[in-house]
Length: 300
Image (cartoon, rainbow, N blue to C red; front, side, top):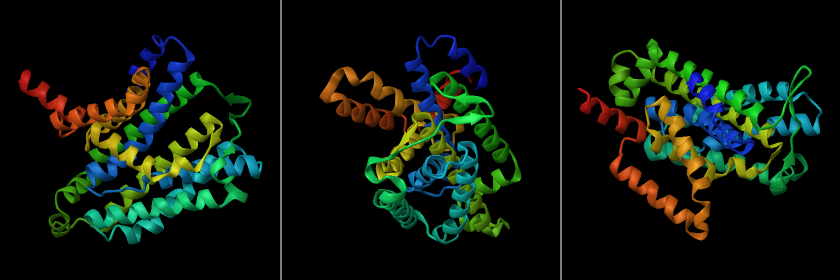
């Protein structure tokens, strides 16, 4: 993956394309975590943007209002978000199916409403500015810097998830996905592993939220909206649940395609919706798993 990112940098013609790719990488970072939760642990979440917003505003408030280093704020924000996920997940993950989906949706709504209404702290719907990220004397600014930073972080996140899935914990998560009752009967600590996936997914979302806030140097409560949660879930499903690479493909699909469809003006969203419907009809398992199956059959 890192080789592909490096090679891609040589063919991108301008800063705009580096910016689009950076946005893809940042979104994919959040979706990789969500895919771990949904695609491997089998737990539905519609409140992922809540964690995304917590990470973003931790960086924003800490650096702009309190004058703390953005890097420190990023680390603290991820830590606090993971702690919140640990506390909230203990209760939410007792639920299953659509009950869990509604509960996580409610959590995301609580975060979004709080960020909108806490005007004195968050700036309310108008949002707030964010200080630039620094590593010592090096200022991380501009599309190319963020292309490399977000791309490298995404690769590390994918490697982390890959290592987890290759371990006994990964096998336990797959067993839970297939049947929680059967997994429990085999001695798997279902609650522990579901909570592990939940916390890791929240951590990745918070990191992605912090990155987006620093990249744009501005953030609004829209980053934690219900629509953003649905967007993350759509990226995971379109790319392919249970596929780490599918997370990247799904993010690219929903970030790049709207850019290509802007020439159609008022028909842009209708065409995007139609393309998504067609993709799901002919690629029910998602883009990456379906194409992988086609290739296996053809070259068997």
